Length: 281
Image (tube, rainbow, N blue to C red; front, side, top):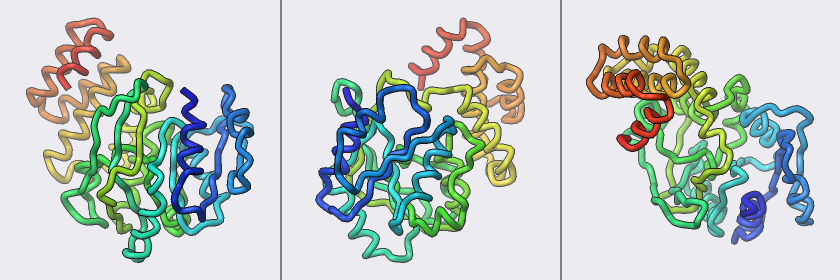
């Protein structure tokens, strides 16, 4: 499937027409640029980076090149419903004090089968620390940010090669007002294609950094600490870093769920342990 073309056409087919589409080619080695050149709409702009800088770099280059007051992100393997921008515009007009919006997400596999639909409403209003306990926006795709927010917080942290969205949301959520639009307006592809979501080494490194950066906030409640440390533990196990995983396990005082998972990775080969974890999860 031509994922990029599908993403571009989902913007071209929007009911709301006052948009610009900035495509950032992060020094890709595939034929993405050839796909983009098929489209002649004057609202489409292509930026090509000479050196691969990762998701954060690409997103920062995109918003800095934008002239609009609002910025929406869309990965090349996801797409928008035709009324996404229309609903976003109405929400911006209705809630002018809000700095970012998200919508419901439809998760689809490579065979066009709908796996699930989800709209997440946080337990606590924003700004606040609720994103440290739960963050199920589903994907950064389709999240709209006021340009002023991106400027104030200096965009995405380019030292992160994974969990770029989570780092950014944790940083802004205690200061900025965000609201969800309770409609399924974004489609997220879940499949076997290459994705940063599956780079466990980068994810593990990112979670270690996040815990170090927000240690006081993460350790403020026992349930929050267990969630973060358990996630960091299994990411370390996926990468074969048993020493780091053991440190997180001991810091949690060895809860049964975490101890069982650690034992599985100690007893079985890595591939088999991963499969067992995914089935149990």
